[in-house]
Image 1 (cartoon, helix red, strand yellow):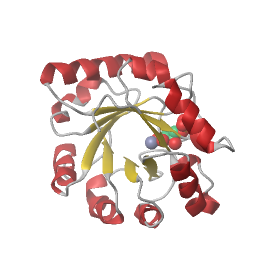
Image 2: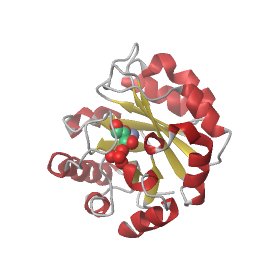
Image 3: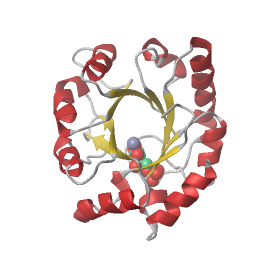
Image 4: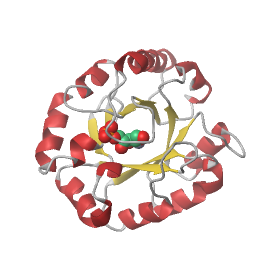
Length: 224
Ligand code: DX5
Ligand code: ZN
């Protein structure tokens, strides 16, 4: 899949945690190809979600590509566990602490044969990602401050960063996907698309409605 193909990724954070297996099935039956998994350590962000054991459990119930968004410090320390658990893509925050470095950790993800992603918080400038762009498959521009679902889309703070990331990609002949995460609905997804995004993470807007298939179809139509 190239970096111009739009895709809607349901975020498991917004699912019913007491019924994960059936929620994963619901996402798959609604047409999802990639599932987004938010790992939070209660330290890098002010919330605690789940870890590698959850990814491993989900892996057994689906053939969807698992897109793991690590909102944790010391991702390099925990990396092997996420690789073993069955992640397809692993995304790292540039703002987090590492025992080694962002670059070495991205390289380990690539060496394991996985897709590697880098994430920028709303307050982090695009320049912070520049040293790593030749190494990555995906750049996630957070459109909310990470930690919780259901927050409003921060258009003014984040869309110029997508513009810069797209321009840089063209100038340097790179191929990374541009992903947005937070506050993505049928009214905000087209704005992000206009600025170059092709991967749209949808928590509340995908898992919230009873009819997830209808919700996913509407979200996909909004960026088609
Ligand atoms: C936010 C997470 C998101 C979250 C998005 O910290 O990274 O993936 O699930 O939720 P919504 O779509 O409800 O804003
Ligand atoms: Zn996320």
